[in-house]
Structures are given as C-alpha cells and as structure tokens.
Length: 240
Image 1 (tube, rainbow, N blue to C red):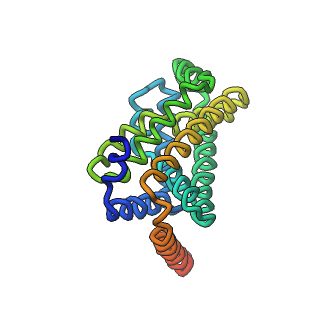
Image 2: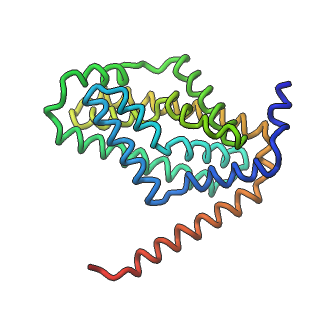
C-alpha cells in the first residue's frame, strides 16, 4: 500500500512538480520581495504579540520552495541546482535578518507584550519533537507538490513548520544586541530546514525523481536564461 502512494504519480506530474519547484525557488527579485514582506509582517506580529499576523506572514512566505529545490539537487545529484537553491536560501536569510534588525531598531518602543512571543520562539530549545514536526511538514509539502490535486494543502504546510518566525525573532534579537535570543532562534530555523530537506529527499527518492535529471537541467537552464534576460533589461534602462 505504501509503495502504491508513490507509484501512482504519473511522469507528467513528476515533471510538472520539478518545473514548479525550480521556478518558485529561482533567485528573482519577486521572490526576495515576497520574503521581505513576509518577514516584515512576522516582525510586527512578534512585536505586537499577534499570532494572527505571524500566521499571515507564513502564508505569503515562499521559503519552502528553495528547500524543496535543494532536496531535488541532492537526489539528482546536481551541483548547479544545489548552488542556486543555497543562493536563494542564503539571500533570503540575509534579507530577513536585515529587515528584522532595521524594524527592531526603529521600533524600540514596542509593545512590552511582544516580549512574551519573542521568549516563546527564541526560548523553544530545539528538540526531537521540533525536528519531527519539520520532517512531517517536509514530507507533506514534497508529496503535495508532486500530486497536483493536493497543492491546496501547501499553505497548511507553510504554517505547520516555523521558518519565518525564527528569522524575524533573530533579527529583533540582533537589534537588541541579544545574542542568546538571536542564536536560539537561528538554531530553531536550522533544525526546521534540516528536517524539511531530509524528508523531501526521501519523498523525491521514492517518487524516482533521480531519473528526471534531464528535465531538471532543462528547467534550470531556462530559468537562468530568464534571470539573465531580466538583468540585461534592467542594465539597459536609462538612468533617471
């Protein structure tokens, strides 16, 4: 029965999933704009002690895709895809910490109640249970991404695993020059990333994605051409 869950996917579904994951994880300006907006919402959610705002930030954050793309690169294996996935992930983390730091600096008179939420996230010491949640979320996300009729469950996956809130708290911690808060939040983020990538590698392996390397290379080549073309157009724009 278990094997039938993975053998039921058609070759077209697998190819479409590969294309969608790589496209959504491409290091484009639009991707980083959505990350900046998502983390900005999360930071204000933390400072205002509003879980509703934090949940909203997780819904618009595209952070899950570079992790799925990284898992694809690992099972192919393809150094080029791994590199571009790490580039997207690294820039996302950098922008997120910068946004959290700047907002934290400018809103030093924040709501004291927000401290409770900061302590909740930063004080969550990484444990086997947090790793288990990340593994389950990664499994659900990668499986749903492959089976098109389950795509509507992806927002739930984004909420279930904490990727954006720890980055927001880490940025606020840096603004307060509190290394304990920042480091604890970053460790929680890393644990979640590792759990998602691990289970995604497992799921993609069971689906037999490693046999689709030619499809993956074509999509990566296409996306890189689009990014290069957009950069060229940007350079050719007359200075105002």
